[in-house]
Length: 159
Image (cartoon, rainbow, N blue to C red; front, side):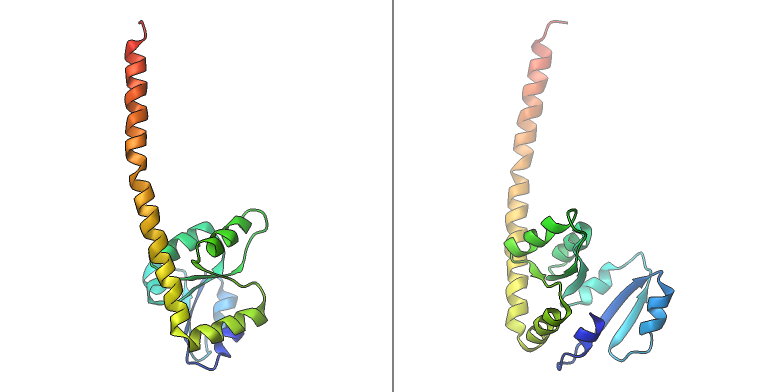
């Protein structure tokens, strides 16, 4: 994946979060346009600096990208457990599912040369977030009504 990104003709930079993987850090430590990021408890500022978040389609990783209004490029997933996340990304137009290196290269080359493609995903994320926030606002009255009815039913029962 790193080779695919760096081989794109447009000038791109990678922030590679390696966590505690010292071998991975060493392997990529001296590559131009790539910054190795060791484990940090404050990953959000680095994600906020990105145009695209790329990685395994874990639910928390995708949610963090959505909060930051960053399109997500899923390059791998845990079969069964994370497969629905791929469908979610595509259904709501929040990013891309691109599991093969050659396809990743072509997608990244397109994104590097076509800012409108990236902007379209950011717009979809904003639309989805607004819809989600509005839907969540409707939950409180439902819960309050259920609690009220339950309280009334409990107080009406003989002691």
